Each structure stands twice: as structure tokens, then as C-alpha cells.
Amino acid sequence: MPYSKITGLGYYVPENIVTNNDLTQYMDTSDAWIRERTGIEQRRFFTYGKDTNASMAAAASRQALERANLQAADIQLIVYATITPDYYFPGSAFLMQRELGMEGIAVIDVRQQCSGFVYALSIADQFIKTGMYQNVLVVGSELQSTILNKSNEGRNVAVIFGDGAGAAVLQATHEDAHRLLSTHLHADGRNAEDLYVRDPGTSRPGRWVTKEMTEGSGFDVVMNGSAVFKHAVVRFSEIIKEALDANGYQPTDISLLVPHQANLRISEFIRQQMGLSEAQVFNNIQHYGNTTAASIPIALTQAWEQGRVQTGDLVCLAAFGSGFTWASALIRW
Ligand code: ACO
Image 1: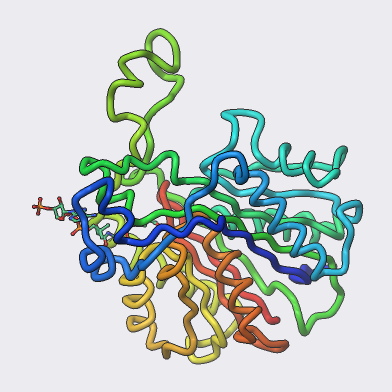
Image 2 (image 1 turned 120 degrees about the horizontal axis):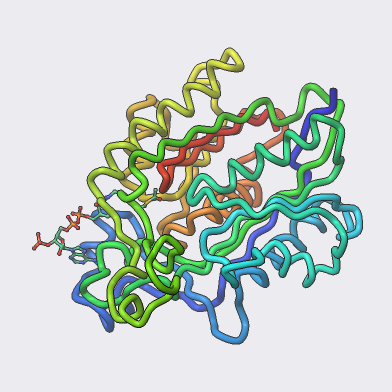
């Protein structure tokens, strides 16, 4: 049976740096408040006319393809995770496919919020393990700055999120020593409204976008911060343990944990709870904020670029997000 191996990684972030102090133009907040509660110092916001969800993904994918020594024509499937697509439909995977000249191959759009990239990786892995495809492009891309309410009403959420994209090339291998060992996926819809955007939606009287809707606050991201925190710290630990147990490893065996960059306080809580050293956990939320489905591939690419992911390392990816969803992947690099 073939296994999967990550052979190329890439990322793209918009050039527009928005510091915590920059946000004080729009809302009553402060650098100290944001740093203390989230660890975030700055994030990137897109430039209109230059960046789109699909164009950021295409830039990340070009880099991943180049590093995998592959051409766009070698890819047989794109699995694309985002919650901030360019259009309501079709998904941004189609637009990126068009931009990269990959017409004709299969594309799958994944909507699993902050767990989106790990879900996408798992989907790609299943197609490779069945022998259906050999080269799959896995993408996480988010353009979130336009869905944020940057006034005082939305400030508890707006200070957290940023824009960016990351990509990985997954290829079939028969090399048992260097491969994706396992993926683990979970969801629980009972908490759907603890982190969600209600509008626009179809289950309404009349049209799916109404005048009342546009004047209301239903487009805003609603987050029950304490519920998210409580569930996140439990589920992150569970999903990391599940990946380790499935493969007969202990937390001390982890070379690098790349958690979804939700909030530095959450990552630090998990690190301490699991008895991991600072060197075992990669964080870059300080520079990019929370980029939802893009956060893991951006972080993994940067960790790899910095030499923190070496051949033979045991790398764990772990995510928790809206839905709620939680997911992990264990990789012997
Ligand atoms: N700047 C200044 N003050 C603010 C801001 C802000 N940006 N946002 C909220 N406040 C104020 C509120 O108005 C409130 O003031 P009050 O006490 O006078 O009413 C006070 O700060 C506390 O507001 P909360 O909304 O309760 O904010 P909290 O202290 O819970 O912090 C935070 C918000 C940091 C998001 C926290 O809930 C948290 O850490 N949650 C964990 C979940 C998380 O990190 N989610 C993001 C990622 S989601 C994911 O990736 C899965």
C-alpha cells in the first residue's frame, strides 16, 4: 500500500503589516491588551486589487510545487481548505486551479474552519493510500480581514485574525521510514454557535440576503471566548495523545508540535499540560495572528525553512476550531 509524504511546502502572506497599534485607529484597544491575551503583535491584511483568497493560495502552491520539483501538470487533485472563499460558490479551489493552469483535475473544497488544513491533508492521504492519486496539492488559505468588524462591537474577535495562505505537496511513497503516519479527525456540532457567522444563510423566510441582514450584526464573527478556550485546551491535548497512542509514541518523542495558531495562551497551555519543552512547539501567531485554515501550513513551512523540521523528526500537527472540530496528523519526516 502506498503511503503519503510531504515533499514541498510553501506560504504567502500579504505585504501589508497591521500592528496592534494600527488597530487603535478603528477601535478602543491597546497593544498591551492584545499581547497579553493572545500573544499577537501584528498580522497581515490583504491589499485590494493584489491579493485574493485564490491568488494567495496560488502563490503558496507555486512555492510548494517548486520545492517538490513538480510542475502544476503533475498534480492530480487539489484539496483546498478555507472559510473565506472568493465566491459563495464555486469554491476558491476552482479559481486557484484556473490561475495555476491545472484545468481538468479534481478539486475539493473543505470547510472545516481552523481544522481545515488537517482535514484536507487527511482527505489527500486517503486518495494516495487507495492508489487513486500520486501527487496531491493541499492548501489552506484565508482572507479574513474583510469579514472582521473592526469597530468596538467586534474588537474581541477582530484583533485575533489575519490573512495568508500555505500549501503542501503530498506524494505517494513506498518508503516506510519517512511518511505521514496517521491522521485523526473529530467534530461536535453541539457547539456550532460558540464560534460562527450566521449570515447570509438559506434557512430564512424570503431571500437569503435581506436588507435587514445587511443592517444587522449577523455578518459578524460571534465567539464565545471562554467556551472556545475551555474546549480547545481539552481537545488539543486529546487529539495529540490520540495520534501518539495510535503510533506507540510518548509526548517526549515529539520533535516538533505545530499547533493551529489559535492564541498563544492556548498553545502555551497545551505545551505545559503535555509536558513539552519550548523547543518542541512552534509558534508564529505573534507575526501573523490567527489565519484559521492557513495557520498550520504557514507555520509548518516556516518551521521547515528555519531548520526546525529535519529528516527523521516526529512532527505532530494539531488543530481545533469552529464546529467544533479537532484534528491531528503525525508525520515521520
Ligand atoms: N481591546 C480591549 N478591550 C477589549 C477587547 C479589545 N480588543 N476585546 C474585548 N475587550 C474588553 C471587553 O469589552 C470586556 O470589557 P468589560 O469587562 O468592561 O465588559 C473585556 O475586555 C473582556 O472581554 P471578553 O470578550 O470577555 O474578552 P476576554 O477577556 O475573554 O478575551 C479572548 C478575549 C482573548 C479572545 C479570550 O476570550 C480568549 O482567550 N479566548 C480563547 C479563544 C480564542 O483564542 N479564540 C481565538 C481563536 S478561535 C480558534 O482558532 C479556534
